[in-house]
Structure formats: C-alpha cells, structure tokens
Length: 93
Image: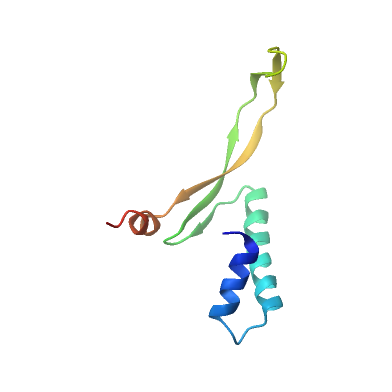
C-alpha cells in the first residue's frame, strides 16, 4: 500500500472528514515519526511495532564495478520491530 492508497482508504472509512484533512493528518504523523527518529528517539505504536534508529559502523566496502576497496562511513539507519499483536495477526491459521 502506498501513501495515496492509505489516504483514500481512510477517506472512505471516514466520510465526515475531507480528503485534504486526512492527507494533512497522515503527513503530520509521518513527519512526527521522521522528526523523532532524526532526534534519535524511539517511536512505539502499541500493537503495531516500534521504530528506532540503529548505527552502522564504518567499514571497508567493495566497488562492484572495479572490485577495489571503498571506505564506507558510519551511518544511521531506521529499524522497525513488529509488535506482538501484529505478529500474531499475521501468523493466524
């Protein structure tokens, strides 16, 4: 599902709200999650999962074209861990 499909689905489920308001709500939620992660905070949505930031250390990589060694700097990457309820719903028989 892409963001526009999410907005459309929410608009159909909530006919009393305007689509542009729903779009603003969805964008605000994503912006807040992004902002919290950029500050190094953890975002937990009970029953769904938790977003956090992990740091990958610097390493020596390989250029696939030349095969030569390339220095790869340390970087921060987003990480998502599913919640127990979501895992249980995905694995129901």
